[in-house]
Length: 146
Image (cartoon, rainbow, N blue to C red; front, top):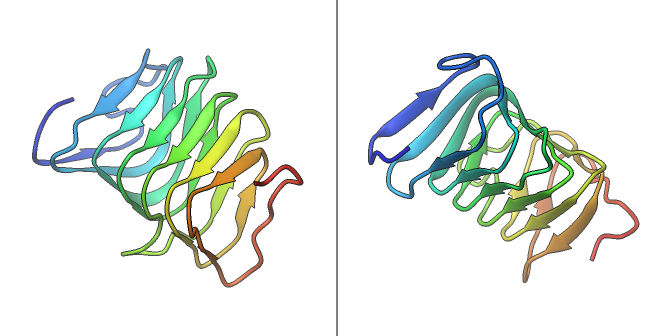
């Protein structure tokens, strides 16, 4: 999808099955207003993402889920055996309610992560330079965090 405008998305707004993949362009922003975004391949969000409600992002085929820019708002749950990548700050403008990743795959954090609730990383985690995890409760990291 290529548009410099804000592009709102909600559950089943176009399709209730799984998309092959999903990529947004860098200008503008993406608002995901709850529900589920399901693909069989990769999901790449090149623009700023705002979560209006709890959202589950799933790649049933093990595709990567990548947030290249910022992520703010509600609670994302990443579900893929591929990589989940946060390339910039998470929860800087609006702290996330919580953040959970699944047990398969890996997670990389390229910026600070701020939540008002739990941060649960169930897979191997790579931290970028000077990454700070901020929450009102302790973060849960797997033993293989580096």
